[in-house]
Length: 149
Length: 71
Image (tube, rainbow over all chains, first blue to last red; front, side, top):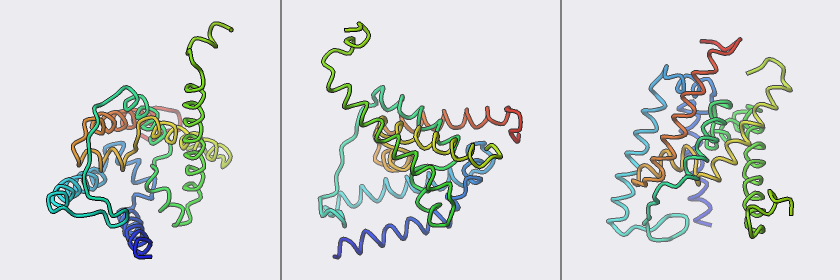
C-alpha cells in the first residue's frame, strides 16, 4: 500500500510539473525545437543536473528506491548502432507530434485528444518493434527470405 | 499540422508509431535517455540524446520551409 501511495504521489508531482512547465502544449515543444525559447532546454538541463547529483548522493548514502526497495545503483552502456538508429526515428516522430512519451499522459489529462492519439501510435510502434524482434529471432538465417527459399 | 481533422489524426498516429518503434529500438526516449541516462553519465544516452535532438531540430527547421509551414 505504501508503495502505491509513493508511486501515486510521484506521478502526481511529475504531472503537475509537466503541466506547470507547459510541456503538455505542443506549441511550447515546437518553439523549443525551433530554438525560439530556451526554457525547455533549461528545464531538461536542470532536471538532469539535479538527478545526477541526487542519484550519486543517494547511492553514496546507501539509500533504497522508494517503490522497488532495491539499493540505488546503476551501470552505464556503450553506444550501439541501435541507440542511434532508434533515436533518428524517435526524433522524427517527436518533431512531427511536438510531444513525447512523458507529456502525452499530461496532455490527455488536460483533455487534449491529441495525447490519446499519439499514445495509441506509441503502442503500435512498441508492439511492431516487438514483433519485428520476434520474427528476426525466429529466423535462423537473415538471408532466408531474400533467397526466396 | 494539416487542417483536416482526419489528416491530423493520421499524422499524429504515424508520429506516435515512429516514437514507439524508435524508443524501443534505442532503449529510451527524451526522459529516460535525455534526462535520466545523461544525468548518470551513460555514453549510450548521450549518443541517443544527441541523435534525437539533432534529428528533431533539423526536421523542425525543414518543416518551416514547407508550403503552409509558418517560418
